[in-house]
Amino acid sequence: MTLDQMYQEEIMDRYRNPSNKGVIEKADIYVKEYNSFCGDLIEMYLKLNPDGKISGVKFNGNGCAISQAAADMLADEIKGKSLGYAGSIDEGKMKEMLGIPLGPIRIKCALLALKALKIGVQRYIVKK
Amino acid sequence: MLEKLKLKTFDAEEIRKDFPILERRVNGKQLVYLDSAATSQKPRQVIEAEKAYYSEYNANIHRGVHKLSQEATEAYEGVREKVLRLINAREKEEIIYTRGTTEAINIVTGSVLLNSLQKGDEIVLTVMEHHSNLVPWLAMKKRGIDVKFVDINDDGTLKMEQFEVLITKKTRIVAVSCASNLLGTINDARKIAKIAHENDALALLDAAQAVPHMPVDVKAMDCDFLAFSGHKMLGPTGTGILYGKRYLLEEMEPVQFGGDMIKEVHLTHATWNDLPWKFEAGTPNIAGVIGLGVAIDYLQKIGLSNIRMHEKQLIAYALKTLKEIKGIRIFGPMDPEIRGGVISFNLADVHPHDLATVLDYEGIAVRSGHHCAMPLTERLGETATTRASFYIYNTEEEIDRLVEALEKARKVFGV
Ligand SMILES: Cc1ncc(COP(=O)(O)O)c(C=O)c1O
Image 1 (cartoon, rainbow over the protein chains, first blue to last red):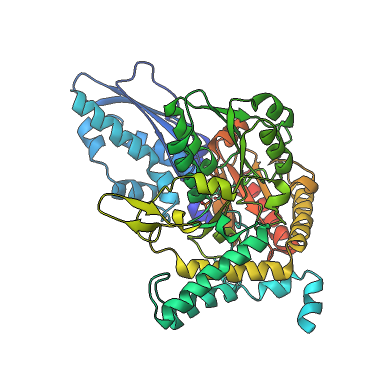
Image 2 (image 1 turned 60 degrees about the vertical axis):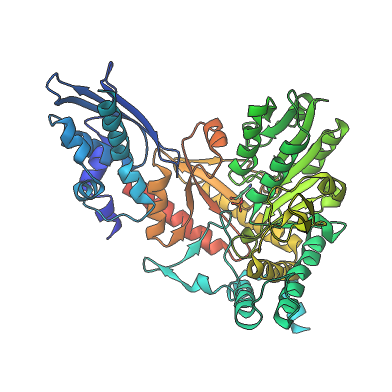
């Protein structure tokens, strides 16, 4: 993989102009998670419809291009879907969405948002 | 004689020939290793010493009367003398082998904790400490012991005047790094130890970034404890040293218990071994320690003053050339006299991981993140930084490659 492939247009676009960055006041699900390797922080906000569909998703925090782009993609992926679907997304799916091979260290950047999402969904289900 | 003549002038190119890994290519480029503050590379002499132990006299130490065990014990114990001379300690009993700086500091905190610290006692640290000289002390807060922090100036030097205020009769221990692994700042450890002693407090120095890079003299600094890592000074991973003044080590309780650290064991009680073995429970990293001995020989042959001079030249060159890059923010003192071979920076709003990835594509190994100093990173107002660190085998040409790669990163990220 070349550098251009790694920092391809979609990644850079989402990093520079993410469509899902921000906060949701009174979110139904809120999670704050750190990447222990670098200290980067991500916050995930989810708003749910009465029927359990995800009506709004935002992420916040600062991180590298890979972690930010991954968070933005993930938000697009689960918007309008069920909580069950959000909870079912696994590492394989996340890697597929990103479409770039990542080593054992950078993969943690890519999976940070997913990790936060999973914690949030889990907590919400347990509470219900 | 020829050997001597060659070593008179510092020759990084000659030194490089001893490091097989430096011939490696990464992503099609010649490797430029600028991450020695994390761990140094190892010369073939060290690699061969470990190999020789395993292939010629591998045996457990202190236990067998057989030939191999005798040879292994002799080689292993012989390294204490080399460490003693390296840091100018008084006695071999003051030299304790550990897994690294982290374990060395934990022996002190673990033992002091059990012994004598009480509610209301205070510890003084600085905001530039590595987590290994911070988290073990924070663990003491549970017992009502207060931890105070000396701040830094904008240029990355310590606010020395704060030591005079924060260190009081309540202070039991002052624990400070000799040199910062992020800012590169070389601290006035001798003065800090003096202020500690004037207030009847003990001084512990984290010398992980000092012993590999400059002459260190525990008698001159008059520190009570000194901790450092073998793997940052050409030695194998899993090696390190705790130096402690004998009377303190005698008083301290061991932190790990088991074989080797005992004198006699009964079903009702046990007594501890003499120093230094009291603190060395179980089979240690024998091959590693033997390798560390060879690493010390290697460093002393070059001379720690020469190493410091070489690194001073490199950091001066790096500061001068990196400063010219548009959008760069360099942290720490700009004066090479008080700065080790470490340069941390950020480039515009490019995240350090992205920057490090671009550099990796150019074959350049740097570290990105908080460098195990989250409070300091936060104090600098950053979430992470990129760090290049130098050692005996680095050259100005490599710094040129770093600068070129940073210019390339500016293009990739459009900054
Ligand atoms: C200043 C400083 N202190 C402590 C450490 C910890 O050393 P180790 O990981 O070998 O225990 C390091 C290196 O990581 C360091 O740079």
